[in-house]
Image (cartoon, rainbow, N blue to C red):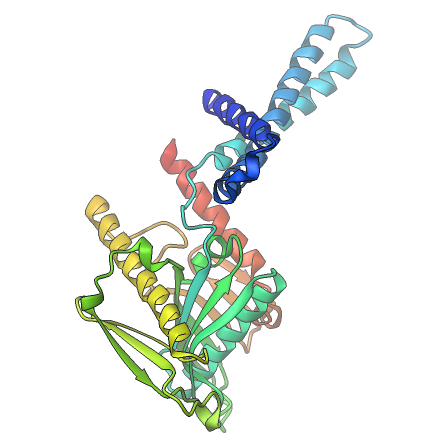
Length: 352
C-alpha cells in the first residue's frame, strides 16, 4: 500500500507542476480533466503526508526516550502519534479503494407508485418531494423529465434529473422498493395501510456512451398533459421513444420543444441500456445477484417509513431513526452515510 501511496503522491506533485505552466489552459478540456484528477488525489495525498508526519513523530519520540527527564513526555507523544498513524492507515485503505466510475455523474431518478392504489401514488409524490428537497439542500439541480400525476395530487410516475458533481455517489443507494405505513388521506376509519413505491437511480449517460442503432428506436409524439389541466401544450411537443430490441419505453414532456424532449429521452434511454449491460456483465462474472450494500435490485424492499411511530428503518444496514418528518423533508445524510460506510467496509473486507 505504501508503494501505491508514493506513486499517488508523485502523480499529484506532477499535476501541481503542470497546472502552473503558462500553456496549461491551452486545451480547456484536458486542463479540466487534469484538475479533476488533481482534486481526486488531493485528499489521499493530504492523508498520506499526515501519516508520514505521525510516523516521524513516533521515531523522534522513540529516540528521546532514553533521556529520563524526557521519557514520560516522549511516551505520551509516541502514543498519540501511534494512534493517529493507525487511524490514518485505516482512512488511507478506504481512500485507495476503487471508485465507482459513475460517482461524479448526474442522476436520472424514476419513481413509480406500487402496491396501494391512490395511497401509493401519494407516497410516490412524498418521495419526489423528499429527493427534491435533498437535492436543493446540497446545491444540486432538479429537472423534471416526465411527471404523470393523479387527480388527488399523487404521482403515477415521475422521472427527473438531479445534476451536480457527486450526485450519483450519494443517491445510488436509493434504488429499490420503499414501503410506507400510515393512515391514508382517503381512509375515513383511521386504519393504518401499507403501500409501496419503487425508486430507480441511474447514472446519466450520453447517447455516445452506449451503442444505439437509430433503426431500433421508434419515436412517438403527443401532447403533454397533466391532472387538472396542468402542463398542457397545444402542440405535440411530448416525446416517447420505444427501443424495440429491449422493449424499453421512455418519455419526456416537460420541455416546450419536441427537440429538447427528444434529447432528454435519448439520455434516459442510454442510461437504461447502460444499466442493463452492467447487470449482464455482473451476472456473467459472478453468476449471482448483487449482494453489496446499496446495489440491490429495484424489486428489493430497502426501507420502511412508519408514520404512526415516527420511524424510518433502512433494512440493508439495520438503521432505525425516529425523525421521520426531517427525513421526509430531505434530511437523508445520516442514512446515506451509513450505507456508504457499509459499502466501503464490504469492499475493504473483499480486498484483503
